[in-house]
Image (cartoon, rainbow, N blue to C red):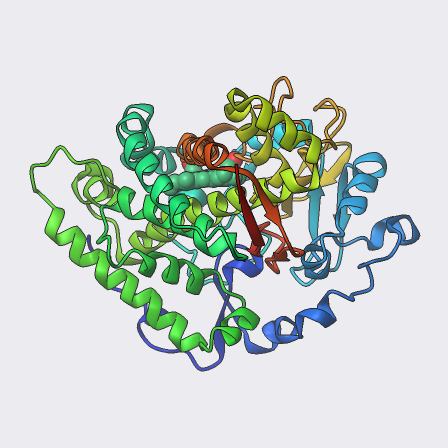
Length: 460
Ligand code: HEM
């Protein structure tokens, strides 16, 4: 590793605060007044002008699907349905995140993903605009294009290769069994904390070859990176605590880098891979931190929310739960359907590198293009009965939850394997994981997730 930390992370800033990741994806620095709206209590944000109203009552050009209230209240669906029909490529001139285009259909998103020279992943892949000194500058390879992206991705990809996954599966099963057998059968509990987080954090620890006893540190750093100011305050933390957490994460992982560099080993973990590959030898600390954030958050929130989302989907569709009980061989197919249905990342963003046309609309160089996977996954023109949750659907892999093309999710097989093993073991033990309260949703238009899901398990 070479270079030093830029001042903005090394020393606390006075007039800027990091804008959070669960709010919208990737931290960036914004002026204090820009975050003020984020401190509005959640219950008030849920009652914004678009929330709980008929989507057809709002003028088309005033629709703003980025409005966080729509996401906390799960009321964005009608807006996307309308956009797919009336304006599949839609311009929102004024939003909390500035002007942006929404791309809402399956085929248009695939077109954008297939043309990275027109629609670039730099400087950022979420709706938030990173200012010049942003944390995302030089961040992980998800926000790089071309050769540099390919080289960095190649370094860590073997960790999630089918060969390594085969090797890891028995360990995942062992952990799943331990988690499920430790669940209380006579009281309600939070599935997110006891199962979703526990399983995905354990998997992350393995992929980083991280201290097992300290594994919840990974969850802590991930949460600190992604928490909105509202969530930070709820955790009793400040922006300076967040900065301190990022520095601690970098410090711990720099020590691991030094320990593992030039050591002969047949172990496959992210840090050993990064420390010993030619392409990442001169990586600067901030790009290293960005890559760590990408790997921690990428593999954490997403899989966690698929695990919780599956329980919710089966509860909301009892006939599908029956199908599962009657035929557990449907599980691999069901896993694809859960990931489509949940769409754990609601969007990815691109930036136009030139004037171009998309869906008959004139796009200008520099315009922000938001690909709403959550909408494309319900696009009836591309997916048969897209608005139904069907665990035995044909072509269940026809979805955009993992994106498409050069940036297609690197951990997709890893996520699918964890979900498959979890449901295989779950259905052996419990005839039902019963939801007993409404889920608490993550206040974000990027991480489409569930913060809390109270359940009771019913053994056979
Ligand atoms: C259900 C779980 C998951 C979902 C829904 C998901 C979704 C995504 C999406 C939408 C992208 C961007 C694709 C694009 O821009 O076209 C992505 C990229 C990525 N994901 Fe995942 N992901 C999941 C699990 C994981 C796991 C377990 C890891 C493991 C560390 C991981 C690591 C990554 C990485 C490294 C990238 C960047 C790939 C690149 O830029 O080349 N993901 N993921």
